[in-house]
Length: 303
Image (tube, rainbow, N blue to C red; front, side, top):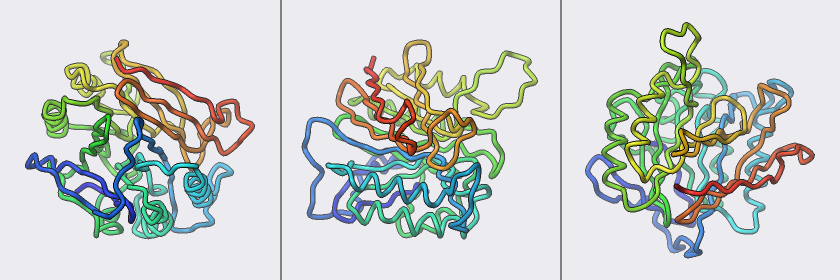
């Protein structure tokens, strides 16, 4: 399955990648805007607990999610879609976590914004799908939640790096990498942005260091580099806002957490992005409006 909530007053095209067809979900009378750029919002690592009062590292996760949604809905122009990039649930992906998450995140789709979600290591596919079962779609990769979202200027490829619930390590796997490579081939007409929860992590051969990111980083990056349409990989997991790149070829964007930070010098909050045919522009919205990263803008030119 793949997890999406279509905006109640908008429509989006989702590729039914298993058969190469186009399925229209949430058709409405309000068409997507025809402006020359596209606006999107990214949340990551919301870590919502069934208990709305739960506090971790001085952060109330539910209050932070609610605040982030309020700020998005107050934008002068609503984004076309909002992506939640994994670790939607607190630790073990419990049913009560997703009930609380769904009750709040539905405000996004009710406002007319399409909502798309990926799996993190603290998510559990079964309870997650049950909480949003009315909009779950069959996935072309067994046991993984993957999908393609077609935009005006770029295509979004959502991948699933969840290996084991509540285990820090992530994995894409052979079947999912094969699907991604074939999907990128079929959709080479536009720039591609890939989104998954786990961070790339290169370790020296023979290293005994624990893998806390993607165990198959090199294999995934090989897929990126073999497809010139791949322009960026967006991930979360580390609770650390930063941007790097792979050998000068693919932008790597590490989203901030909406919940809590591991390093107190880092911001939590959300990211507002605009894309056109040649770049991805990112604006950081930190909850601490005095943080040096707040409202910082970054333009990532496509190569």
